[in-house]
Length: 227
Image 1 (cartoon, rainbow, N blue to C red):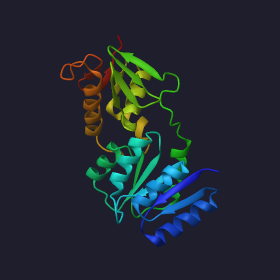
Image 2 (tube, rainbow, N blue to C red; image 1 turned 30 degrees about the horizontal axis):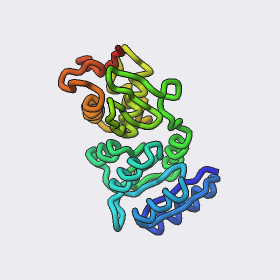
Image 3 (cartoon, helix red, strand yellow; image 1 turned 180 degrees about the horizontal axis):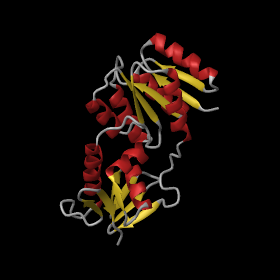
Image 4 (spheres, helix red, strand yellow; image 1 turned 30 degrees about the vertical axis):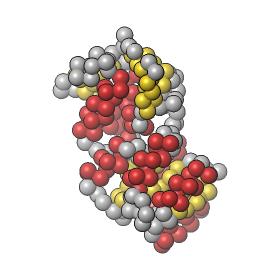
């Protein structure tokens, strides 16, 4: 039975979601604070976290950032009363896998939950390691290795690299990346992709200002070029 952890301080909402997910066949645990939620994650290893941004002790964004740093493959669906694009961009850039704005319908939440639980979280299953010059990308451990230096990749950075590697030497549009990686209708703008690519270049390219591997195809998108 798949286990869902709900980190939310609205007791009425927690009770409603707990009852609903239990009727759908899930094991449900709840936490009313970010600190308690992180403790449960480390103790119980849930399959999915439903995480509110506005918590009484720690910001949900900080909880997401810390947990993703510890467990990159952890699936997190963020809830927020804020619907502005900047909030979605921040949430997704720090590693959230999906973002749902309150108020929401439980059927939509269920659909997104099922989609995340179905998603294969082992990126690059066919290709787990790939070398680009002096940099070795390890998709399973979410890191780039250059000499003795190891740099952690975020979940989104890993997904972008995995997709680019799967389409080596082919042009990939920004919209393709948005559709394939986020996988839901309410995704951020293409600026988010551009910012993530800039971060990837700093970890992979010998000279990020003059990229050799992750190339910009003006008017289209990006292309990963192998040695």
